[in-house]
Image 1 (cartoon, one colour):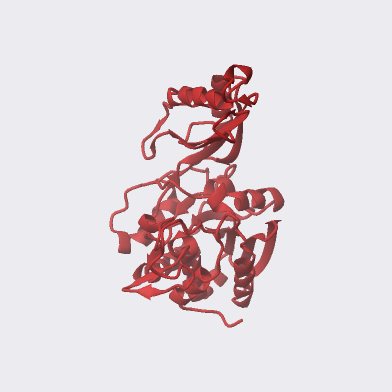
Image 2 (cartoon, one colour; image 1 turned 90 degrees about the vertical axis):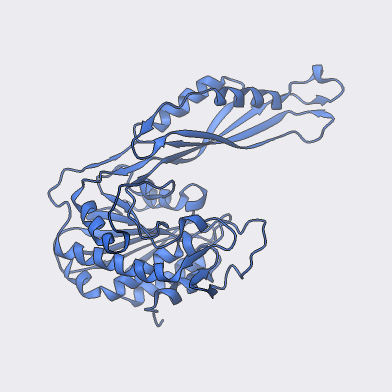
Length: 387
């Protein structure tokens, strides 16, 4: 394979591979990237986690002492949506300085920018401990790929000193994200003719009562950067036809949490609140993530971003699978990538071409800094994740 050294062309190549999730099907993209990484000197391993579903873990070891710098990105994308696109979503078309396509901003541009930065910084990587790349599938539906890495690849954070998550941030460094706890409530009833409701037990009424209780539940936790926790009931379903008493119904609720909230405790509180009429189960559980802005490595990342971003004020994003990868670790994390947050998940998604080249420069500075001043070799972690 002849590898690409231009970040725009590499991003276009990745956009052309459809990885919509669901169903995911990251295999083509993962295998292509595996070959690309091997071609530029990495040792790469494909890790399946379902039919057509793959993660990719790759190392480029250097000769220096210290710890590895890790990068994480997800290969899957959200569906196209119902609205018609004005461009082919899988062509990587460029118009007026914008590279269009599903995944262009979220987050194949971040993956491409980091890989090109590695190519351009090969000499400093060789002189450092090296780089580890964690490319995941299934991020858009609850971080399934990141969870599979945790379960199936013990030691994936061994000798890792810090992690960059390449989510779209316009190359601005973000220090954390809220957690996500997605719960499904299910109720059972007894079917009967709609003209004789007294002969049945209406399951929809049970979830209506449950949702009303949820709306009155107080989420009191606050965080200085993330604000307050939130709750949203996103789906409701039940019943088969209008003239029958429904014997089954369900709803799904999206809770966004902040550091200091324990998901298991929150889930138990809600289960008690809803009572025996509703069975509550979790189908996504991503803890919140926060790295202290005073962490020495994060301060150096801020300095690497300053030529493009100016003064850095600590901020957080609402999205990332970083906390799943490091949920029990003292590894500092920054969320940093060239994508445009305002276009993610939208029709006619794009990434600005100038941001792609800017991202390569920013990642390159961080790679050079990793060689020049090592990270937390001694260090007590200044890092907190709510479990």
